[in-house]
Amino acid sequence: MNYSYHIFSPYRVCPLGAHVDHQHGLVTGFAIDKGVDFWFNPTDDGHVHLESKTFDGTVDFDISQASQIKEHHWGDYARGAKYALRKRFALQKGVEGVIQGSLPVGGLSSSAAVLVAYVMAFAKANDIELQPFEVVKIASEAEREYIGLNNGILDQACIVLGKKDGLLFLDCDSDEYRIIKRYPDMPNFEIGIFFSGLTRSLVNSDYNLRVYECKTAAWNMLAYTGQPLKSFDRTFLRDIPKSTFEKTRIAMPERFAKRAEHFYSEYRRVRQGVTAWETGNLKLFGKLSLESCESSIHNYECGSPELIAIYEIMRKLPGVYGGRFSGAGFKGACIALIDPVYKKEIQTELTKRYLAQFPEYEKTFQVYFVKPDNGARFIQNEK
Image 1 (cartoon, rainbow, N blue to C red):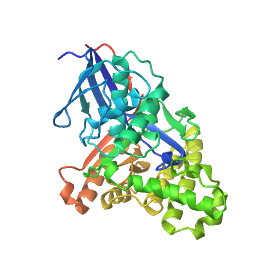
Image 2 (cartoon, rainbow, N blue to C red):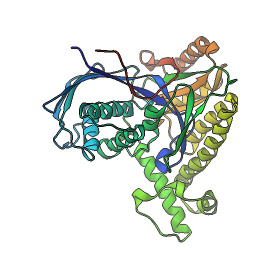
Image 3 (cartoon, rainbow, N blue to C red):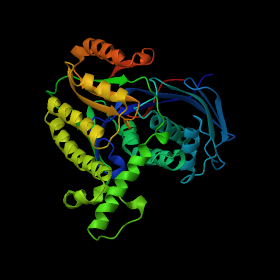
Image 4 (cartoon, one colour):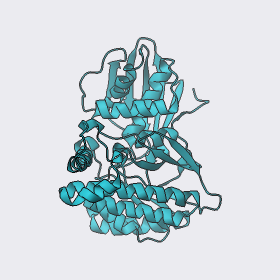
């Protein structure tokens, strides 16, 4: 079938700003040159028919009807996009199309990339003009309210707003952002993506539990200092000064103190990292990314044995500036900023040492090298 429209929605990586967007922290990120392709035609009768080159089965529903309960199927992401759009707009035209991902699922926010693609497609079919940040908000809302993942806006912001010649710096409290252009004399770099061989679903991981632990830490601090408590959904670590944490950390259970320690230390690392990036200091930026991963392991307490093994191997390899777990950091992938001169050596050594520890992933462990790219967009001149 010939399709009138083609959307490319990239995957994303976050070198600094791990696990803090849901607490309204500071984050950085890139869109990358791998992602989701969605080819489609509008349908006048409101019917949505979707096929996937990645997953089995087809998806069919009426875009004008309210979304029912989740079916725990890849079609839930299309229904989630419809759900969030219908809260704002009357949808009458559906789409028929096919979607395909270009890398294995795990750690690159493929679910957010898919949601962004569906939001853009349904809007186009219904002649709805959305500003980039509106796409971010709608896709994020779909993932929180319909899919059930209590995330912030990091993933969608990187996917929609990313630029290939700069680093996205986003304040998840004010929603202010800017693209920091590459310093003219910054060394050349690419992004290594190292898949553990494990896949994971964030809704079924400890992701949501960590969000609740962060909020509980905030509640502890407010209670210990005699301040009024807000409802849980309006409680964020960003609203509480670090000085309050220093006064109360010894009084709260260790697990909550660790989650808060990660938040405040990551806030500092992002600030330092932005300065490093602005001055072209890729070595310092990479070092901060490694420190971020250390805090993810010891304070945020995420990371499977497989991911920790990849991290421990990669951080010692020549040509690796720095890196950390990608995504939620429970099973998926590690990312690293690397010197392209060392690509072959990095791939060979990492593969050899990782599979020596985990030979059961010989067929599923994979190494990719990607570059920053522009955000989600329509690909022109295709029919």
